[in-house]
Amino acid sequence: MFTGIIKKTSKIKNIKTQGGSFVVEIQNNLGKIKLGESITVNGVCSTVKKTGKNISFEYIPETLKLSNLGSLKKGDIVNLEQSMRMNDKLDGHIVLGHIDGKGEILDIKKEGNSRVFSIKIPAKQLMKLLVYKGSVAVEGISLTVAKVLRNSFIVKIIPYTLAHTNLKYKNKGEEVNLEFDILAKYAYANKK
Image (cartoon, rainbow, N blue to C red):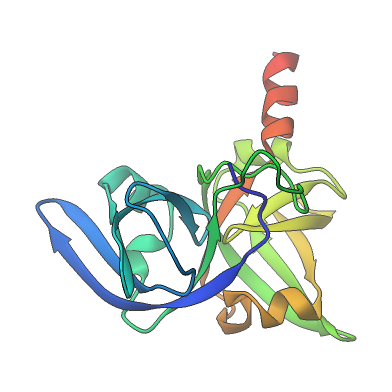
């Protein structure tokens, strides 16, 4: 379990396909990491396969289908968050690292010292999981929904978040990983 508060960004050092898997090697900016530890990479719960100066993760086709990890390139910057400990503060919201799909950045605008991201929802049925002032994880970042539109939503990014995440490198037309709030999922499931 995670909070959506990104601790570090890091650079992709190497990417290779290996026996049907997609292996991503990332510069270790987190310090001491254990084999098998869970870390989110752009919001995707990932198991550490190799540690040291660089950290490696292996992804299966299902993960690549639902997330934007398959389009990563050497040199790209990714968001990292280690899993939450039971005594940690919950600064963001409950994030599982289970991506619901890829959203497309429709627009990025300046608004004072913030950035306004308009993001298209990957599937119409996911719209029911968004509420005004509710939570959504974009690239693993816990964000507040500023507006819900017909097939998209708007989030407003404060300067600190922009400076300390990979959102500063994102452009219109790019895909971002989306995870909708688990509380919204349970609430919707109980309505059925």
